[in-house]
Image 1 (cartoon, rainbow, N blue to C red):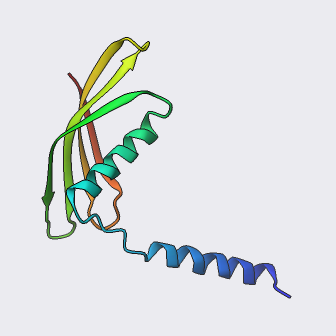
Image 2 (image 1 turned 90 degrees about the vertical axis):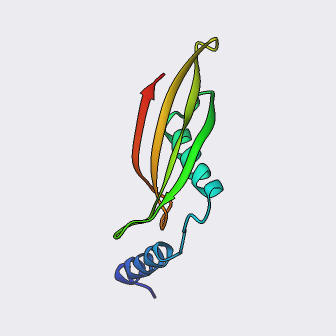
Length: 105
């Protein structure tokens, strides 16, 4: 019979093994996907279009990142386009967004 402490230990092992999976962002397409996924989480249920302008890899001493720049177009009221320029920094190891900046065009 398992006790509650055994179940907690199993959960911890499961969570640790999930974190050790290598998510590594290998190319520009994967960086685009990570940026699009972040935008979808920031603007749920909104209709928008994303145009990627520049994507490049920047290797550093402590952390490698992908820089992604583009234009986000959303429609207010379904008719009026609202354009914003954006810039992402995406961690190359985990695929997480480190930095995000947006400027209204």
